[in-house]
Amino acid sequence: MHSWLAASALGAIACWALYKFAASIRRDRLLEDTPLVKIRSAAQGYVKVFGRAKAAEATASPLSSRPCVWWSYSVDEKKRNAKGETYWDSINSATSITPFVLADADGECLVGPVNAEITPSIHDVWFGDEPLPAGPPSGFMISNAYRYTERLLREGDQLSVTGELRSNSEIGNGDAATAKLLHQWKSDQPSLLARFDKNHDGKIDAAEWEDVRRAAERESQAGTLQSAIVRTSCIGEPTHGEPFLIAPMDSSHLVKRERRHAVMFFVIGLLSAGLCAWAIEYARAQPSI
Image (tube, rainbow, N blue to C red):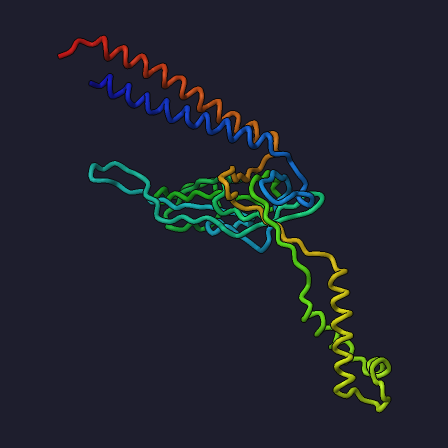
C-alpha cells in the first residue's frame, strides 16, 4: 500500500514538474525573442526594457523606513500548537503599488508594479520582540518572538522590466491657453489698445473685445498645434498573460535565469518519473496479502 501511495505522489510530482518545464520553455522563448528596446522608441505592446529606477514620489519601506522605489513586507509571530510545537503565524503583510520611474539614456517611463513577479535587490529577515521593528535590520537578535521579512527595490537599481507598454499622448488645453493669452494682453493695455481700438476712443468696446477674443483663440490654437506632444508611458501587467517581470539584472542574465528554471523543472520531472516507475515495479513485486 505504501509503495502505491509513493508511486502516486511521485507521478503527480513528475506531471507537475514536466508541465512547469513546458511552461518555462514557452516563457523563456518569449523573453529571448522579445528584443531589448530603448524607452523612447518603444512601441505600445509587450516590451523588454532596461534602465535605472527612480522614485516618482518620496517612498520609504514601512518596516525599516529605508528609502526605496518598491517594497514588500511580512510580519510573523511565533506561536505554539497544542503539542507544544512552534510555528510562525503571519499577522501583517503588505506590498507597494506606487508606480516608479524607469530611465535609460534616451527616455523614461512609469512602471506600475501591481501583479509583477519582482526579484528584489534587498531581501532581509530579522527578529524582534514587538509586532513592528524598532528600525532596520541589525546584527543583534534580542528576541525571536516576531520575524520581519522585507524585500526592496532601491532607487538607482538597474532593472530589466518586461511587460505591456501603454502610452497616452495629449496636447495642451485650448481654452486654458486662450484664457492665459487674454490675461497677458489685458496686462499690457497700451499694446492692446494700439492693436484692437479701431475707433480710437481709448477703450475696448464690446465689438472690439470680440475681435480680441477671436484673435486670442487663433493664436493659442496655433501655438498648441506647434507645441510638443506630451507622451506619458507606463509599463504594467500584460493583458494576454505574458510574463510581467521586474528584476535587478540585465536582459541576458534574465533570460539565463529563466532557462535555469526550465532545466530545474525538467530534472525534477525526470527524476520523479524514474522514481515513480521504480515504486510501481517495487509495489508489483510485493506479495499480495
